[in-house]
Length: 235
Image (cartoon, rainbow, N blue to C red; front, side, top):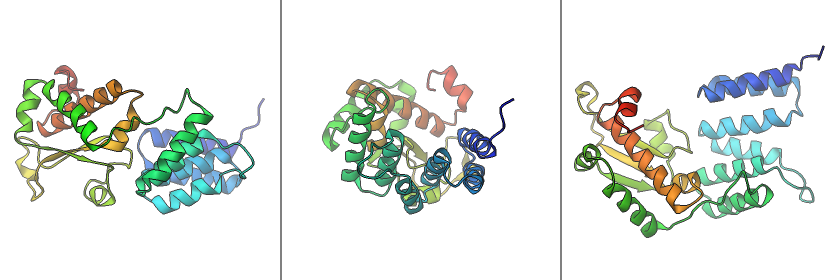
């Protein structure tokens, strides 16, 4: 019989919590795993990921750097990609893109290069997507504008605590028919360009991710639940 590994068991519990978006429980599990086994690489990397998703960016960066290998040893592409996402969340886009390139070099099949488009090019892709949206969504565009931002910010996260730095889009405001939740915040759908550019392996895939994100976020504005959106082809 194989002897159980308590630290690895805590890591598995933490990863299950991550899948369920229970970041607090995930962090507790990874902290406990590292208490049991301070050298557990998986626990350390998962802990850095969790801190990143919790917007504890500086702590996440220090945690990711702490498990980096010496300069003369090959790095782990998962660690490199995570450090890139953390630095991107911190606004260091140049260093982030260098890390994304390195992750791609280390494991091309798993980590593709982001499809960087530039502001005007991204807007051109977006305009074509908007033209092809269903009528119910195009009508909603008249009431709720699309705003493109490079990344979500901590200020947005303070208002919308459920989002992570890697989110693709976000509806902010009051859904149709939800008058009990009226606020002073104007209705808007955010698209986060750098996250969307990392979501596809080609311009066509980026356009597809933009479309999926818009359908989903405008579905929230229109008051559709997940079942409604799936029935209407908006999921």
